[in-house]
Amino acid sequence: MPELPEVETIKNAVKNTFIGARIEKATVRQPKLRESVPADFAQRIEGATIVALKRIAKYMLMELDNGLTIIWHFGMSGKIRIEQNNLTNPQKHDHLWLETSKGVLVYNDPRRFGLVTLCSSESPRCHHLLQNLGLDPWDEGLTDDYLLSKFAHKKCAVKLALLDQTIICGIGNIYASEILYLARILPIRTAESINSDEASRLVKYTRIVLEKAIKAGGSTIHDYVHPDGKSGNFQESHCVYNKTGLRCPQCRCDITKTGGIKKTVIGGRSTFYCETLQK
Image 1 (tube, helix red, strand yellow):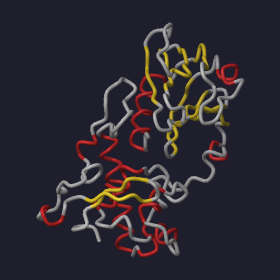
Image 2 (tube, helix red, strand yellow):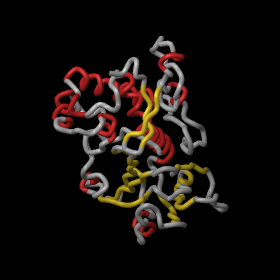
Image 3 (cartoon, helix red, strand yellow):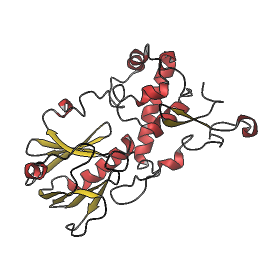
Image 4 (cartoon, one colour):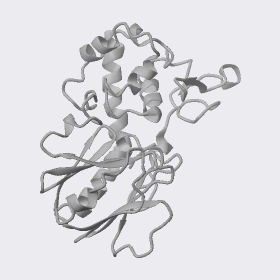
């Protein structure tokens, strides 16, 4: 599933190509996604010009000059493809495309867990998909005191608290494991057990990990690719994610005794950690 770094990478690629483009034709081939594409989607956006691209959490927002914004969420397998010519031969799972004055933007989603919908540009945060989201990782309000207040009395694993989109929005499963590793915190600890120093480290490494992942174009584990078809590179820098049994890069333990990086399941999600370094 595209997480914040992947969505930011997609957003930047779309922005570089389509800012100032006029939407000449919108085609909805398959409206039945996680939420149905609005029946009047094409009618409401054709003729409009794309004026801004933004990201909120794991959502990409395409702002138009007619007061509407297109909200995109990529679900488990959704991806954007950029074509230079009109789409005369759609690929399998191409569900929606926009023909513009600067090329064609195609939404492809084999599993159809993503969505494309519309909201008012004046108040996107009022839309039901966005209204309950927490702070962006780079919001000035994200401090150790903020985290401590949100984690207080939460008996769930701190890994689950990091994935709670009403606290910090945008962190997904891959990056939660990496953040907790660098912060030296066991993912199975309760959120309420986190102290001020540990909360400060979580804020610090949330930003560091996500910034590095964005610079690397995100992580390609299964389906994710850039709009130009290239893979992300950050998976090559993962410290613990999907590295069961290996020695983590900052540990000099004897893996014949420790067993190396461990894997567990928390909240139904695979979680990776080093029990030597993380406490």
